[in-house]
Amino acid sequence: MKKINIFFLFSSILISKYSMGQKWNDECVGYYQMNLPSELEVAVYPINSLISPAKEPRSDYGILIQRTKKPEITFGTKSRESNLNRFQADFSEFYYEKFKVGISSKNPSVINLLEYKKNTISDYEFIAASGRQLEKRDSELFDEPLPSEMESNRVYGFLIKDYNNAFSTYELRGYTLNISSGHRLYKFWSKKDDYLDDKSQTAEN
Image 1 (cartoon, rainbow, N blue to C red):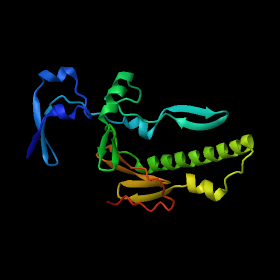
Image 2: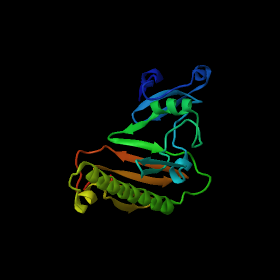
Image 3: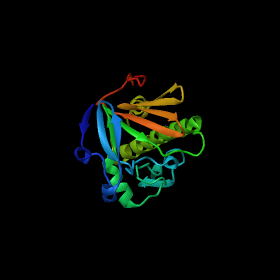
């Protein structure tokens, strides 16, 4: 195997200054073997911020456009970590080929994927409803034609596809694959395409 020094990875992995005196372990990643400090921290999405996000409503001149707090990666395990933890974790976002990968912290019990899917559908329906309200408001304010219902459905419509312990959501320009395994959620966000009207991309591979 080829060996690669950890210092080449500073752009994507942040190491605490206290790790310099720690024991280093050999880890195999694909075709490369890397020397990593044994106390290396991994940034994850706190599981509660995904399955039970905190309420954080936001309005746009009277129209509700956000209901809950958006999940953010952190070096901690709680939904509300310090700004320093969040800022450092931003450098540890992981990309695999064209996917951005999100891993949750470990849940004490088995994750109810069906309930999580219901909440995901509810979020998409809410975005569509608030988006339509914004279209109507802007049409009245700027005296412009209201986009047709068909056009609105094209922009805000979505599809759900079920797999074993997983489901994918397809939207206008991409899709997200959600996998439940080992009391964790794994999310793969696809790269956004310029146009995906028929939502023809698939998540099987």
